[in-house]
Image: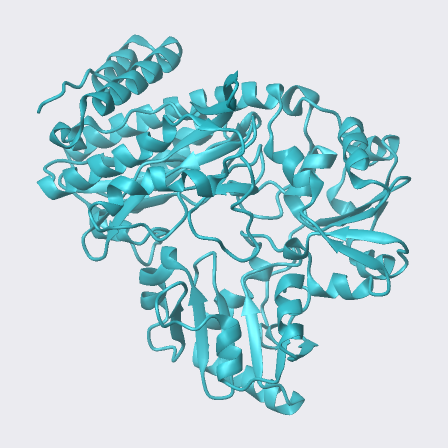
Length: 586
């Protein structure tokens, strides 16, 4: 099936005299997670990971992805004749090097799905580009574009009105026209949320704002009469979603765009104007949560922490009596979150038993899942969407007897996480400045995890949010050098993944806070807003020093004090056992 689809694309290429065709994992808004309509790369390759792109020539096909998905991609690309290109590995050509090595002079792609940075790089290499959508010709039963209803976020949840956000944004634009395609930015400014991407409450839309006007391009069938009236009251003009490109042609002036978050087709419409490639001012506004948002975030994590305590207790008690499977465990966790008030998940949970967890983004499906027994470990990475915030937490859980080496690795990952969680740093540091704190203990074992250490998290938006993050290696289109500012939320999630053996990850969410200010500058620290015990059964204190044992005990005391007032007596006792004191053993 995959081979036949690629063969058809090659026929189109030959007819149009195109040397190569490029299909990335994107929609018209450069979103990370995609509605079913936009799963072109999955349709053409069979690879289901969230990141990666397919490159087809007349004789070969290549799938690029990063270290999170190497193991998964190997499995999903079997018998497809598609070569896996392991990004970042020694000797692997990047996509531009491959284009040159294969002598490509003319490349095709859907210009609505390719960002401006990529296209301008091709332009610099003097590659001819043709914007053309071959996939739609082949994909006969392609899903429709989503049409989920939009809802308005009340002030008690967001803290700042739409009118005030627009005023603050205009002050940062300095009389430029700002064209915005990134969905979470639009939803943030306008205090709206939708359901067009699974587990990410956004709506397909574009926005253009200048000194006088704010224009929203959206399928108006998604808006209630009340919401339309509310938007109009704040002087927001509403236009049909599919009129955006023609409207863009009429813009005259100096235009601000973030080339990494704008599609090439949109960029072409404003040629002739002065165009500035800038990080959107919205990104910084959105990343620094206000006091109302932070209060709600803490509350949502209390709710989520209670869910996790009940889930871990259920899992450990049930596995003593009967075997389970990854799907049943996933369903149980999802039900607990729904009962706790989550209106959605924040992503598809990763529930991975033993060797499955070596695939960082493993996904159990009805066609591919494992039974779970009372031995080994289970990695559970999950989160919820609440009206008070978006959560993301990972815990690795002992299910019975565990090999001593697994305990050593778990304890090392825990040390790594605590090293970052408890740091004091000067304002001016970025995530790149701090990443080594989480990797150092793992590097001492001559191991590494092929992913970032942490990512920003949206507020009732995407579970992955920029511009900040924690990662040691610079990436194209990313802003790892963004300074960590007060109010930013970031994850701390180091791990160890050994193919065919096991995977371990532990993840907390942190809020950047001011600490002491003195002659040397403003010192910063993290507030932990994830309230869930680590697994005491997996901690080997012989690998810990006094300070590390004290850090674990203090965190567990903090978890107990935070959650216990919301628990009945039975679960208070359960939590007390989960957070009992550890003792240092030399």
